[in-house]
Amino acid sequence: MAREHRPRTAPSIPGVTGVMTRFFLSARRLMLAALAAGPFLLGAGVVFPSTGQALAADDLHFSPNEIRDWSTRVFAGETEYRVVELDGTQALRARARRRASAKYLEREIDLGETPYLQWCWRVSGVHEGLDETRKSGDDYPARVYVARKTGLLPWQVESVNYVWASQQPAGSAWPNAFTSRARLLALQSGDARVGEWVAEVRDVGADYRRLFGSRATRIDGLALMSDGDNAGVDATAWFTHLAFSASPTPPSCP
Image (tube, rainbow, N blue to C red; front, side):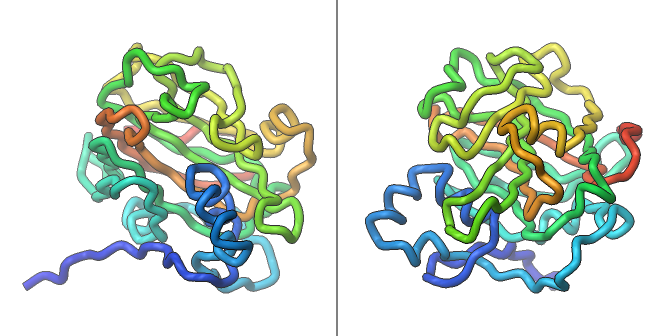
């Protein structure tokens, strides 16, 4: 009998954390619980081994199977992540049924060597009638995050959230409704390209300069998610060809 796949879930016990757990704890309602419980809860999470060196793009092409096995951060029930075959290629399907959980990886990535983040994504639909600048509307069919530490304290994190927006226009940016340490950037908007594969390439350092006015020479973690918990909505997204690259050439989507 085949073994059941069980994704890793970040433990909710005190300890040392990496940047994505810091960000997630500060980005949602969990920040209030963390502050009430004391500073060590903000450090709860998974410790990833460090080589002391940032990794180059050749080491960072992430297959759907690898992403499925990343750690999971649960907010309000678990988004279902499953590797599927779609249009002749493997993809990670994220299905959020009024739930929210993210897949994340803690790893230092040198933006001097590999400045471009690229991926292909596709959504089944968008959310109607949401105000995405408010907490009640902070739900997106698809998100890809990058995050960097800006200091030693747990809350010293800056995160860029690339989203497929439902209402906010493509190209617009706004602060996350839960924390000023995250900025959202709409790469796609609305239903014009629903059901299509869309290729994305981002100069991550340039986005940090635009959104935070900061000079990012590296990132310390990345994540992806589909969520529908705040507004109680459903969403399905597919991701593939996620990588960091020295080239601005977009990936070849299915």
